[in-house]
Each structure stands twice: as C-alpha cells, then as structure tokens.
Image (cartoon, rainbow, N blue to C red):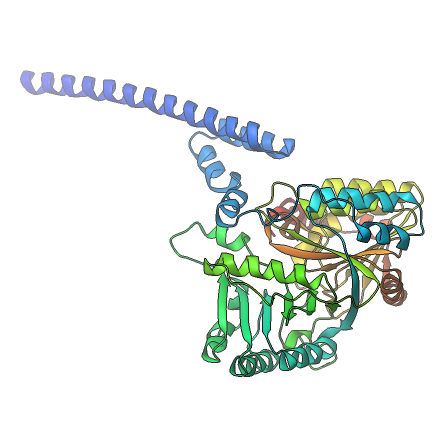
Length: 495
C-alpha cells in the first residue's frame, strides 16, 4: 500500500506539474495569438469600428476570437484577387493627358465648372481616357434588347464576345445558344465568359450546352471544394457585356433569361430592366476589357478583332472597370466625386442601395446645398434582406431632404446614375458593398445631354407612379421590423 501510495503521489505530482506547464503554455499561446491577430486588425483594417470590434473579439475570447478573425476578418478577397488577376490598368498611362474628348465633354456641360473639372478627377482615378464620337441607346426589358442582340449575333462576320453573370437555359437562353452556335459554324470567332457561380442558376448549365455547339467557353473562378468557399462566393464577375466585330457593344445590368421578359404578365419571376447599345470608338475599350477577362479565365492572351470603330455619334464615353484586385475603390470614388460636383440634380435608380458612408455623406451634403437628390428603388425586392438593410438607413437621407420613391412591382433591376442631366453611368454595378467592394464590375461614363434627357424623362415617368417614402414611414415601423432591419444592415457587407 505504501508503494502504491507513493506511486500515486508521484503520479499526481507529475500530473499537476504537467497541467501547470500546459496551462502556462496555453496562456502564452493565447496571449501571442491575441496580440498577433489584434495587431493585424489594428494595422490593416480601414474602418475604425471594424478594427475595434475585431480587436475586442481577439482579446476577450481566447483562441476562438483569433480563429474567427482568421476565418472571417482577414480580407483574403482582395489579396487573392490581386494574385489571380493583374492590374488591368497597366496598359494606360498613370495620368492620361488631356485630349480632344476632354474638351468636347466640357463643351457638353452647361452647368458650370464643377462637373467639368470632375473630368480630371475621373481620369486620375480610372487611368483611362475619354473617347469621343459614340452613340448610346437603350432598350426596355428582354423584349426590347434580346431581338437586337440576337440580330447582332446573326450578322457578326468576324468576332462575337459575350460575358454574363447569369445565362439561363430556358427558352430565351437556348435562343442565344443556338444563335452563337450558328455563328461558330459561319466561321465567327465566338467566345463566352460565364461566371463560375452564376452559371449554376440553371440546369443544365449554359456552358455545357454552349460547348456542344462548338462555342469556346471560359468559366470565371468556378467553385472548388478544396478552397475556402468565401473566396469563390465573393470573387464574382458581375459584368454583362457583348461585342460584335469590334464595332457594336451591348452593356448594362441585364442577364440572359426568361426572367427579363417583363411584358409576360404570367411570368411570376419577371424582372423589369434596361440595357444599352454602344456604337463608336469606345467599343474598342470594351473589347479590351473582354480580352483581359478571357486571358484571365483561360490563362492565355488571344487577340480580338483588331478593328478601330468609326465615330457614330456625339456621346463622349469612358469605360470604368472595378473589382477587389484594385488598390482604389475606383467606382465608389468616381460616384462620390460626381455627386460632389453636381450643380442641379443627382438621380439614382438602383435595385440594391446600401451606399458606403462616404457616399451617404456627399448625398446629404448635396441635398443641404440645394441640389435635388432623387433615389428610386424597387418596393418589391428579390433579396428581402437587402431591402431591410436599406430601410434601416433611409432615415439618414430623408432627414436632410433627399427624395426617395418606391416603384411598384414587379421587381425593377434597372441601374441609372445621373448628374445634372448631362452626365450618367450605365453598367452592371449596384450601389451596395458587393458591387463596390467584392464583384468585378463594368460601368461606362457617358457625357450626352440628349441621352440623359431621355433617361431623365423615363425616371420622371416612373416617379409619378411610385410611392414616396417619408420620414414618418421610417419612424412608424414596428419594433420587430426595426430589429429585423437593423440586423440586416449589420450583416449588409456579407449580403
């Protein structure tokens, strides 16, 4: 018994020393991890509120806090995107010299020097020149634009390049697939880029059917099981772009599918939208954007049509590409600069509206200095959490005189950003964190008073049949609705 007791005493003593050593090492490890993760957040987080929150999590929750920060706090999206995709501005001079298009754009602006001088800001941010001699027109819904796009595909003789986020394989999608296949058989160089995540909206996948037609298909970062899922979910190519023979371009926010046949009242999923046709020299830049994307998804560069389009109209345009591979949030900076330069009006029509704080501030300031700020949103949204998050912050704009309207169902996916009825953006980007920080987007700046006037008339017609949102509407929300909206807003960077 004495021997057994002595062994037990020694065993208990060794266990106690081991536990003490383990506890000390665990404490040291927890301290090192907390300091390292909190220091990383302190040095690299741009938002002080986010930095403070992550520092608190890392310090107050040993091991778990640093693990959460490692999984969700580090911006791997931007880091991974830069490694995957070189900066596509390298072919442009750091600060484009002023050219004839700059002066022509200034001559089109009749509202003072504010917006005219903004041209310099946009050039410095985008690193791309303005291009004169373009014609831009718009189409309503799939009924308007799809026949024009199909006709363009059918008439192409040399090249046909298409990028889209969603390519449905319903009746509309199969019309496009058949037309693209026919173009291949005519000897046209047909290439299609499909987003690796958006392609899964339909079964069978469009890429599978296109390949059967002989179309060359590139998939933009398709999901992979052995990689952190968040990387693939967020690194999305949201651009919608078609270029035929290097001379005709289509761009905007419309995907390909039956959902955009909005005149079919029996279609419960119908979506109202607008798409744009572009003719003129700026189409060459649109083609450059596609070729850059094609090189990225295939791993090799292939030349395009090598055609310089002839002048077609009076619009002065500039292409803006944006994505998480950029050092600057170019699109957000251009929007903020444009609102700051406004002299008369700011008009925004968008399906998803969760602007960054900086854009919120300049919209409030514009309204306070007498600028009419009009924001038109869909009352029925296909992503309810985004609508809830928007409701949580609308009072901050309404309080300072910004006009907000909800247009009636069906869901409206149209995107228009316009300043002073002379300057506008068309393209794929929404005004929310996903478009402005996570997606690869494309916008086209357009200086064209005639086009802007037509779009302003369209917005006014929509406004007249829409419901104005008031500060009382926001204040009268029930407590559960306020909590729901606040939680959605809290999660808005991830929606």
